Length: 245
Image (cartoon, rainbow, N blue to C red; front, side, top):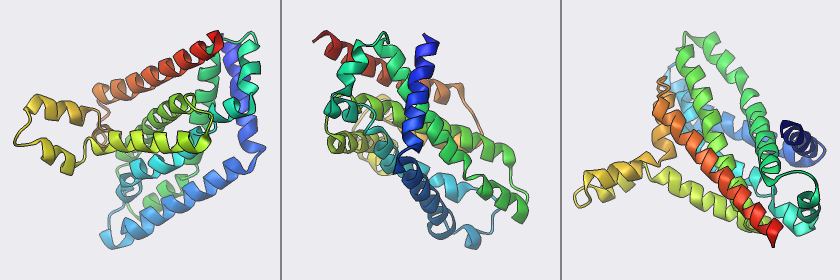
């Protein structure tokens, strides 16, 4: 099984770096990270040696950049017809899904890793809590995995990359806003506390913020792990249905 996953992984990673996609994504990601950290995040006026301003905007950064990465995963295969060839190969849908997902996640990890100069900068300027920063990086990686799995499943539903992008942004926005104070305030006063807590439990903001505080709770890891497993399972079901059609 893992040999097939590795084959798909290598194929996807090669496709990233043989096209402008990887380089355009990295330039935009790193540029926006810098703008959010130093300009919009008021890094210097705050006078704090931490990366709070960097990680605060990560859910919103991923909301638009990760769908740009996932929209082509399956939609492009369906549009070009290469998915038909892929499904005739001695590779199970699960292996193809995992290979593509791990490649996209690895690429997102590379992009995140390239922000290490920010970490060096705050250590140069002060004495930050590196444990909190490390936990925030781990949380960001989980967050990216959740977005990627969701985007991959939605990409398999259509042959149009633009539609895949819009669907992923829309669903991702719902997951983010479910924990926003304005949404929770809407439920307060009339909805049972259980319903309010249930809505908040699906929020990317809630789980990512918890990890960003330096506390890696098992429940937050289970949330992102379950989300990734569920979305990849749906992805496999869609491919198996298409293979059997």
